[in-house]
Image (cartoon, rainbow, N blue to C red; front, side):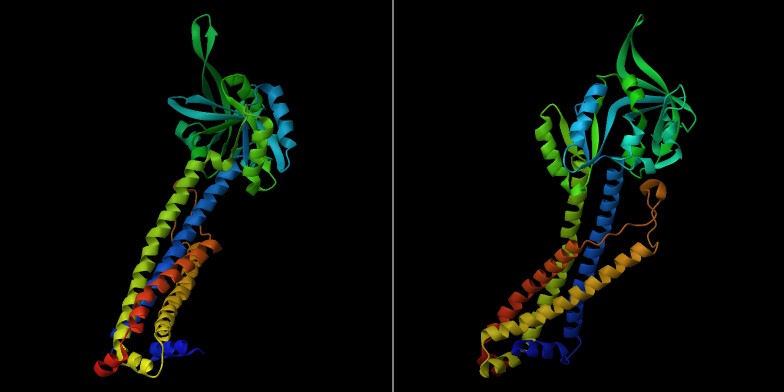
Length: 405
């Protein structure tokens, strides 16, 4: 065992002249422990919410969305071109448009999406989100069917089996002049994606019925694509932009939700910085503890120097002592943080209202890279906190230390 480490361990195990030095050491260790545990727990909870939101978004959307196909023939041609791209697993045509939904005395603006159920459910998980009704009912009567998000249906007051009226923003020329185009739709079912933006604004109907209702020029048409590997979204989108040309717009799921993802990333970064201040305060406690230790051991330092110890060895003694204090706090903080994450994930300590968050428990996801970053930052701050006390101890004059120590 190196001499510096041996002496540092002796200093940590030695009985103090009082409890003050012990208490300051314990506070430094406890501060690092609490800071690391709080940071790991907070980041894991935020990762859980972010992962849950991403799953809901990806489940309700295609990995890639390509706009710019007009008419049935244009969509079929685009489908074949996108399906032939390496990395694409499935494609489905769609048509998007805005409309005003009315039912009795309620009026709500909605986004209506025309789709082919057989193809659509190969590019997303909408088929698994239906809570009432059936997708097969979109074509089973003379009145076209529509599937509404649960929140939208609640706001409108329309439930499965009832008929609503959609008003298109595109006017139609009649003998009485330009009038808004209206079409009856029967509510065929309700879906629950778990993502409020979709559940409160989206309505899904058969592609042919939506194309007839909106007209060729009133909505945005294109195809959605599901990829073999989600991580290849940017690369495949880049190739499609090059192959399809500027008349087609290719967007990944991340680009279509970039505001939300950026907000989540910014929130996580800010929380990391704020909670790191707890570790910084604890590191300052470690620095004050080592300064007091160097004053307490002034005579010992003088004797060591008189016996031939170099300033570098004295400095390493206090660096080793500060490192062991900080490392002990980091290890205990890691254990406490992981324990808290397990408890929050396993037991319903914090219950969420399901009608607001679509969750009953706080989601937790421990990211190894986040844990490594927390441990690295904590260790760096602990080492930096020991530099000044160690340098101060190394500059002690042995004659003055022995004489006045």
